[in-house]
Image (cartoon, rainbow, N blue to C red; front, side, top):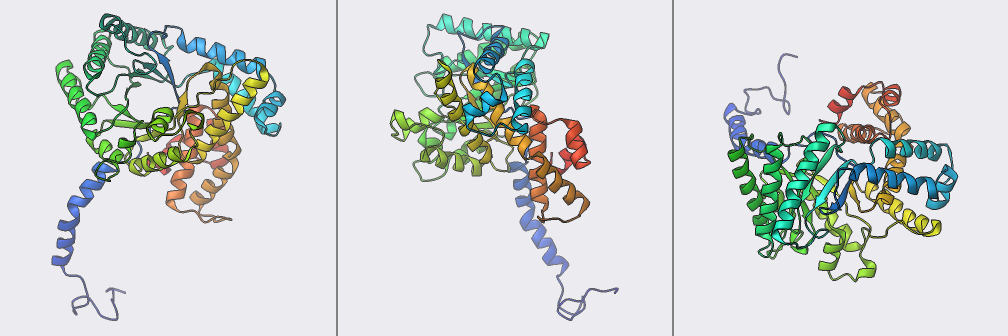
Length: 429
């Protein structure tokens, strides 16, 4: 058929779109297209760590990462030396899957116990004499530079400064300045550098940090936009503003492309909602509401999400450790099911259950996800008819498992017939 009929009529008979109408649509939607591309660029395709470890600046040392690994292994071997002991601790079946996870987690704790480390100059550090914090900021940068140089640094590392509120603003800015300047003087900014801005209440506080970083980049001769930062959601004002609008979306916009993540602060946010200390938790209803708002605001922007932490520490006799581990494990699994793929860990003994929860999540779903993705690529149909958006999610799931070491490249390729490059393409990376 040489001509397309519309409602029984041929083009030119009055039943077609005119070139003027098409041009008008392009003129109308051109700015929208540009705005969509600017605001919603999608995921960057880089690795997202499964956790962030926080250590006070005065505690951070050259051996912090290796020390956390040793302590985590000691706790794992002492209280869950076998998969049967681990199963009893977590209340899960002692099956082939758990035995595999147990071995993989132990290897992970030996190889890469910490994926993301934040040196804390805020709540975990507290107010100090200026000279003391100045020295700590310089020292942190020097230790990071040395760790990056000798290969002992985790993939992501950086600092959390004090917030932009009036009482501590100057101190936070001074710490950031010293830290960045020392890194530059020592050889440059690490590829995995991460900065964290806590207790944000107004979008203007985000803008303020953007202006500071713009100024620093110009003066240091860095490319514009080189330095990004995370925004911590720890106050009610960060979720709902006085005008009734969802403030967190405004904060992402105020970051002007520099926001890399939104991190939920369990205890500060719960307290700001009036939740009593005994009930402050990652699974409290106020936490779920805040994280749902964060999730919708960040969707498609490339800004990643992180859940908070539990303050129940796995120490003491085995029974007590097991109770704390079960709580932590179940909270991490809950976060993963809700698409919060990162969280905070506050103690070395949290690392075993962090990785057990994460590795189980990716390994138990590996075969099903691979089969669905393989069927989608082959257009073979099957029990579930998946669409491109689901194929994107399936690829993302497999890639996250690969990035943290829960699954191996060879087994993913064997099950899907796809290599890393093909998975990245399906995931839209």
